[in-house]
Image (cartoon, rainbow, N blue to C red; front, side, top):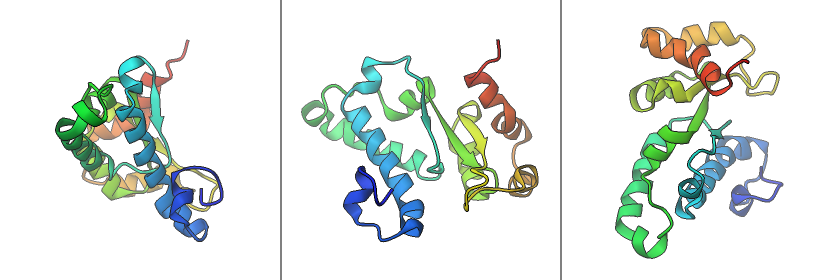
Length: 163
């Protein structure tokens, strides 16, 4: 947040609107880059990691960018970073997606494994989805049914098994 330590504080975001809109994804991008470049995921390949409250639209293109730069500069600038970003994601990460965000749902289903994407609402916060089921139905109309079922319930069951 704009008033707490972290990446977005350095951007001098003026208020809650800017902080919520820009700060969450920027902090997440920086944190993931820092952890990957520092070799954290290579040292701890079984550590489950969740990407929360930052959307997913940025993730495929940012990971592609991370990989291009890892290949170009990694041996010199980040020698501990051995594994490509998408392999790290597929091995040990999940991300949440807001129920009513159609563009993020499309990107998630096109570029990410559905069993690594979970539905979120952030209700009762101002940016939450009060009608989780209705919002999800409207946003997901016409999209892949199997992937949507996984996002709606299967991912959380996979990552947080009962028993």
